[in-house]
Image (cartoon, rainbow, N blue to C red):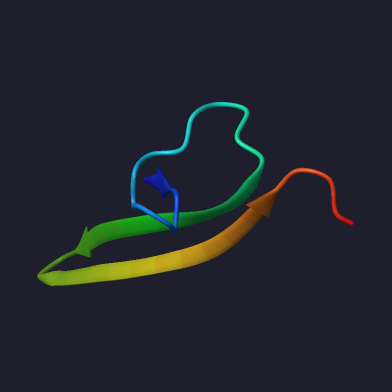
Length: 44
């Protein structure tokens, strides 16, 4: 899921600004969870 770090709601298409990509996956009996901070839009 691509979420807003301020309120954890999904970000809309065309979002500019900060977001978090949150991923959960299962490999065999192991559950992997990770998140990556992202910034969309023009850099200053």
